[in-house]
Length: 462
Image 1: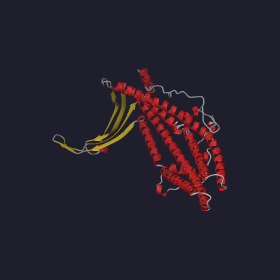
Image 2: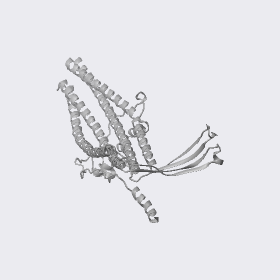
Image 3: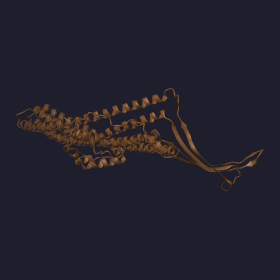
Image 4: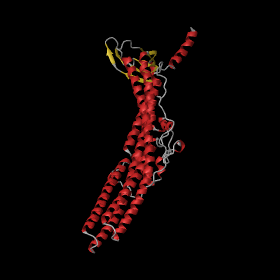
């Protein structure tokens, strides 16, 4: 008998170590050895040099840095994501409470009268405790699922933060591109005014016709119209920045600057490092882990649940609880239940939980594929746009020389004003195309850093 008493606790400990959840491993994905589209603007396999923390610092722009700091404290979407993360953490803590017994206190008093006993004043005070024996790992799997959900929510928060930071940087560089376009159009309009003055003087002297003057007036009006459109685009971008930093558009402004910075060279992590750096990949993997744990929770329904309970206290029928009370106590299982027939409900729940796991695993693989594609896309853009900008800069230089030569020849009477208009229009188009390419390169750099995972290092979401 003593041997049996000694073996029973060991058997219970062994049962408590059981878990009905499948052994978990992240879904297998095919990881390429290296990214394909390497180039001078995206040096590869430099994970240690990849942007971390305040990743926008690689652009060395104090105004951008200030806006990103304001976004961290004022963006409403980021505050929503943080609240969702707090909810997930609370649910995880709630799941952990199943690992501990529940304890309660109850007190009561009444006054009653019967024919046989007369008046009585029963009163009682009792305390109770209950604890579910986690024989099959139901509670532990719920805790594991809650923990994985909280980690996925942490990664979601990081993904939202990174996305908003990238949106702000992209809008900021588009605004700077608009500033540069406005500056070019303003200087071009000044040059067109000088050309218009020249044609008017030549017309007054009989050296040119009203046709030339009309062309000059048309060209100046078109440049001024384009300048107004660029200013309208800038206003909309400024309003977008206001919303991102959590401020009303009416009271928000960003000072204009001339010129547009060059895109930095962006170090690229290896494909395997991207899986560790991207928060959306981490979130997808944690949801697979949570679904795996919930398979164990569903399986537990096939086994009996055993809950131990104990209670004790005092009760009295005379109204003097503390002096004439009787002590009462109870110890034993509060419940031991095992459904026998349920019409297939438990089997269906296990099948559903497996399907949820399969869905999460497929979602993880798709997220990984999208991550690799986004990196390849932005690397291709960064390198091809850099080459395109070099060619476009050559086109600008040629257009400037051609416009200067056409103006000189017209002033000397060796060319028509149509030659001047054509050359000046080509110069403006070349300059605006160069600025557009430079802006697109900055956007590609932002998106490449976002595709690489920004500065997210895992933490609670890993």
